Image (cartoon, rainbow, N blue to C red; front, side, top):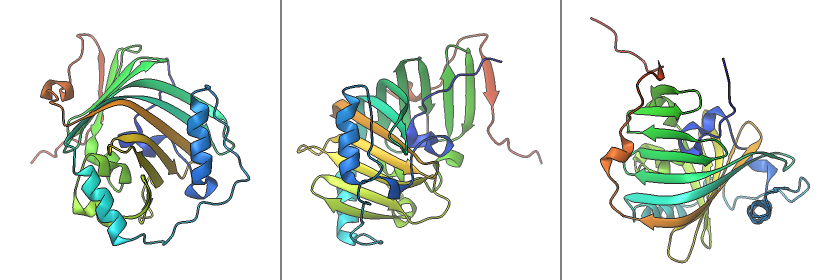
Length: 248
């Protein structure tokens, strides 16, 4: 069987692959990495000061500020560039494509380079389409998103907010998971003056960093429900890994 190393959308599948321990990088390191992406080379210093959180619990005011900011859009469309780096700052993977979000819990993540792939989340199931292998893998969405702070982007469930602390510094929000089983330790969101999301960096327990830069972001534009419906070509292999209901 042919296998390819795919760059997955971190919003749903980050627990399966990417990101890095939060203690490894400082905010300055992240900014250096983001600037370096334009040169197709990411080099994160390994001897930089440890990023210090103002409070382990953050503040209620900062959490409320981020929650209010994210509540201002129901849909988000844009393009992205994604870079995965290890703890030494060496680039492991890169990709680019288009992203559609629709609350609650719908996602369309289309990778256009270096290899085409498509992931659709309809709120219940996740469909990962690989044109090269002519295969679709289907999994339960809840299994991928439980205790994942990235879900704050597409869900406003109180349970998700109770599981994180938030610290704000100008237009940057640092989100730290308070649960032991979260695939993401830390998430950093940056917004521009118009409150549009410009970049996202996540860190997990696998000591890798996932850096996303967004462009051409449009908020609250109509998104067709067809964008979140699964369809495939006849003859493709369908690997349905969803938990099947037990027969009575």
